[in-house]
Image (tube, rainbow, N blue to C red; front, side, top):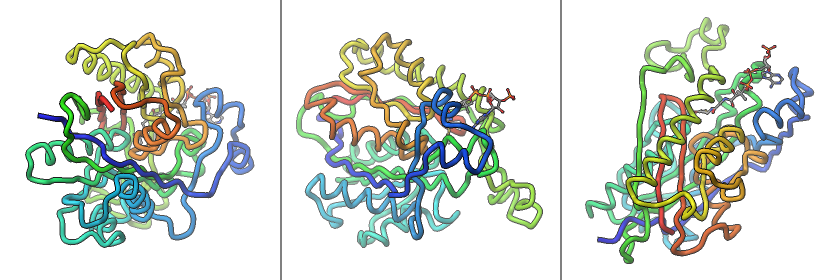
Length: 327
Ligand code: ACO
């Protein structure tokens, strides 16, 4: 049976560009520090009226156009995000309304920066069974809404944006999503989290005053584990599918820190040129990062039909995931 393929890709990037120098005018940081520690030069931030759902809907519209499909061709909608417009209804339902997709199921998958990989596995499985012909997978984040703009250790890292793909059954054997590996370690919820706004700590004057509605991160620990787990999924995927690193035409890593990407390159013994790196322009866009990078790699001709490509991500949860694709 032919694997599930990504039949369309689309992205949405806010127009507003914020450089490291812009940030350095507001907080105690510098372009030199941010670039050398993270590889980030600038990021996009959502403007007036741009929400997770509206950016996600625009990315989805572009993916539909890319696949030559219309809203009537979609049978299920999955949005992966850690910054939904509201706790409920889901961002997927808001995207459905925004696009006018009729009455198909819509739901969110929450796995932070690994979200898109989780979305691929969930959506791919629904399509593989034959129960749904086409799945729309959207990774969209308005990270600027959960960032503490007074915390220099986190606010310089993130950006906003969205990416989307359409999944459907392919026709060629061995072409499409070859394999996916996912994992999680829920015992490390102390490393990356937003404490308030959920049922455990509903919003009060006190939670707002304590800045509990902002993302908190232990950057050093997250860095180490990202290196370990992204390397782990990459190795596992290659080994169990009998593919050597050298056969990978392109690697699409989650864009959290260019030094994390460099350690993955060292572990796979591949040159940096095989990796799509756009963190310099967009920062860490969480669940949007992998589809944004995948779309850019395709646009730049970094891979062609028949090439192996590898996706890998790591994020809050902790969660991680990887996918081996033959394009
Ligand atoms: N500008 C200037 N100085 C800063 C800044 C800044 N923006 N931020 C921190 N510093 C200072 C610190 O205060 C510290 O100073 P001190 O030594 O006087 O205390 C010094 O720089 C070093 O700080 P570290 O935290 O040790 O810096 P490190 O080299 O570890 O880099 C970073 C920090 C960039 C956050 C790194 O740890 C990292 O990238 N971690 C991974 C993040 C990640 O992968 N997230 C992915 C998941 S995200 C998700 O799921 C949503």
